[in-house]
Image (cartoon, rainbow, N blue to C red; front, top):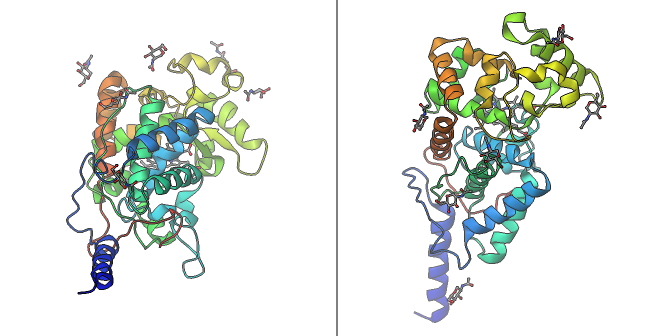
Length: 342
Ligand code: HEM
Ligand SMILES: *[C@@H]1O[C@H](CO)[C@@H](O)[C@H](O)[C@H]1NC(C)=O
Ligand SMILES: *[C@@H]1O[C@H](CO)[C@@H](O)[C@H](O)[C@H]1NC(C)=O
Ligand SMILES: *[C@@H]1O[C@H](CO)[C@@H](O)[C@H](O)[C@H]1NC(C)=O
Ligand SMILES: *[C@@H]1O[C@H](CO)[C@@H](O)[C@H](O)[C@H]1NC(C)=O
Ligand SMILES: *[C@@H]1O[C@H](CO)[C@@H](O)[C@H](O)[C@H]1NC(C)=O
Ligand SMILES: *[C@@H]1O[C@H](CO)[C@@H](O)[C@H](O)[C@H]1NC(C)=O
């Protein structure tokens, strides 16, 4: 065989492995990239996330939500990152369920650095998982810290309709939330654990307009009328409000601050969500709904009572989330750019 045809065969073999590898028996491993790149892949992700969060810590919440919205729709495959194209005008990110999704530019920056360090090696799906971990470490001041198994591939399929049908809605009742999470293999306790991510971040008023007329038993009336309604009535058509009452403008909060769990400042990822929930001081109906059933209420109490336990269990639940796989028979690749298939 001539050298050129040996190379050709080799190239074809590698291409086949990289592009057509099926994802069915997905085995992810911690330290997956240790022997695949001369530079530290996870170090590059961490440093880039740190720099982004030093500039704007609110992006941390966006990166955590990105993992949830990627993994609940066709598994953790970076399908949420794909931009509209002529042949696929409505990918996941155009879905109403993905309103407000942010952090795409941070993922792009990380990907560009990794392509420079070791081209065609690191999947966008793994970047999303690493970045969500690093954001969690940062926003919790190291209280949440865990290893992320890697080796995911990027999908070539992304449909708005899949996001609509798989992601939970903010007006869901507790029974619907429980069954939505059960479809993905998550228990009511894990639903409660993961919802604690709403201790950080922000939301558009359109995502909780139902709460502006929620009855007294479901929301603190001062919070409803003097904080949420006021913020939503002012400014642009669909303004943003902090998910956690702790992160609201202190002036607007007035004497409601007495209820609020003390914190070290805004954007702290901690168990304050559970204290606030027990005080009817959470944003979405789907948050409040967790105290509307004994199966979930007992866990709201559990995590309000023990922040260390929540840190540990949240880490475990994020790892479990990050292991959701693509539908059987799907093909994967390592994208060159996270917003487009190769
Ligand atoms: C239990 C069902 C859930 C519902 C119904 C829900 C719904 C929402 C909604 C409506 C928003 C605001 C979007 C906007 O208006 O811009 C939001 C924000 C957010 N969600 Fe959830 N969510 C759920 C679970 C989760 C989970 C499991 C996580 C992560 C583990 C998560 C993390 C976040 C974060 C961090 C934000 C703030 C994002 C930002 O600041 O950009 N959520 N969620
Ligand atoms: C990685 O380092 C090895 C040993 O120094 C070198 O031979 C190889 O060319 C490097 N690979 C890349 C992609 O830089
Ligand atoms: C997170 O854990 C890693 C590995 O155990 C450790 O090296 C690192 O210092 C920890 N980070 C923080 C912020 O605690
Ligand atoms: C807080 O709200 C008050 C009253 O609406 C406003 O004057 C002030 O600028 C706001 N502060 C911040 C930091 O947004
Ligand atoms: C808090 O504010 C509400 C509404 O303005 C008022 O009715 C209530 O008396 C105040 N409570 C305290 C302790 O200042
Ligand atoms: C608050 O800050 C102090 C000092 O910086 C730190 O020791 C403590 O762990 C922080 N608390 C939380 C809940 O992060
Ligand atoms: C909180 O949970 C941690 C971790 O499971 C445990 O070690 C600790 O004893 C718990 N604290 C209390 C007060 O129960």
